[in-house]
Image 1 (cartoon, rainbow, N blue to C red):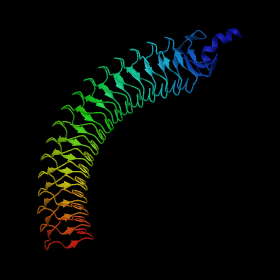
Image 2 (image 1 turned 90 degrees about the vertical axis):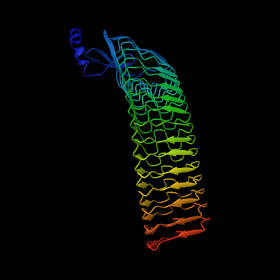
Image 3 (image 1 turned 30 degrees about the vertical axis):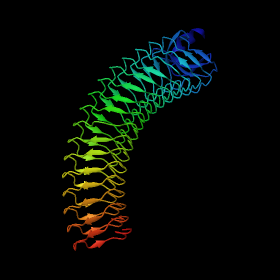
Image 4 (image 1 turned 135 degrees about the vertical axis):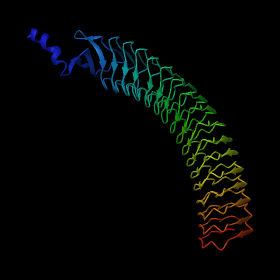
Length: 434
C-alpha cells in the first residue's frame, strides 16, 4: 500500500484537494498550490515545502477573510500570488513578498485596512487590478522597474498614501489607479507614460501640482476630478483632447494653459473650478462642451477663438465674475443656458452666424445693460434673457419670427423694446415683470 501511495499520490494530488496541517493544497506542474488556509494564527509562516514539494503558488482567495492574521512570511519558492489571495485580512500589518514572485493577481491585498507598508520586489512584472484597493493604512509604495502598467484601481482609496514612485518602465496608468488617495501630495509621471486612464487621480484631495509628460496625448474623463488642492498643472503640447470632468471640482486651480494641440474640451471639463480667473482657448478647439466652465465663479476673462463653432449647453453658466465676452463669427450655435447666471456680464456681442438664441442662454445676467441681436437670428428661445434686470432697451431684428416663453421676463429696467412685424408669435410671459 505504501508503494502504491508513493507512486500515485503526486498524480492524484493534481486532481483532488489534499490537507496538510491548517492548509488545503493541490499539486501543480512546478510544485504545490496553497488552496486554502483554515487556521486562526496571528503570525503565519507559509511552509516552504509540503510533502517534499516546493510551495510555488498561493491560489485565489487562499487567505481571504483571515481576520486574525497580523503578519505573514512567504517562502522564496513562491512565484505567483493569486486573485484576492489575502483580501479582507483586515488585521494584517506586514507581509513580505519574496523576490521569486513575478505576478500578483487582481485584488490580492484588497481591503487589508491595517497594512501600512509593503515592498514589491523587482521580480514582479504584473500587479493586477485592485491589488491594494482600500488599503487605507498604506502610507507609501515603490513600484519596481519591472512593472510596465499600473492597472485599473490598483491603489484606489489608499487614503493614507502620501507618496508613490512611478518608474520609467511604466507606459500606462489605468483608470482609477490612484482614485481616492486623499493624502497623496505629489506625483511625478515619467516621460514613458503614454496613457492615463479615466479617473486615474480622481479625488486626490491633497495633490497640489502635476506635470504631465510630452508622451501623453489625451487627458481622459474624470482624470483629475475633485483634486481640490490642485493649484497648477502643466498640459503638454502633445495633448489633443481634454475629457469629461477632467478637472471638474478642482476648486483651488487658479490658472491653466491649454496648448494649441487641443481640439476638444469635453463636457464639464473645468466645472466648478471656482478659483480659475482666466482662460485662453486655443485656435485648435472646435467645440466647447456642455458645462465645460460652468460654476467657474472667479473666471473674469475668456478668449473664444474663431475656430469654435459650438458653445455647448451651460458652457459658462454660473461664471459670476465674467464681465465681457466676445463670441466669434465662427459660432453657429449658442447652447441652452450657455451664459446663464453670469451676473457680472455687462456686454456681449452675438455674431451674425447665430440663427437661434437658445433657452435660458443669457438668463440671470443681471449686469447686462445692452445686447445687439443680429439679423441672422430667427428665434429667441424660452427664458433667453429672463432676469436681465439691468437691460434697458432691446431691438428685435426683422429676421425673428418667434419670441419664446418668458424670453425677457424679469427685465425690470427694460424701458424700450422694438418688435418688428415679422414676429408672428410672442409666447406666454415673454415680457412679464418688465
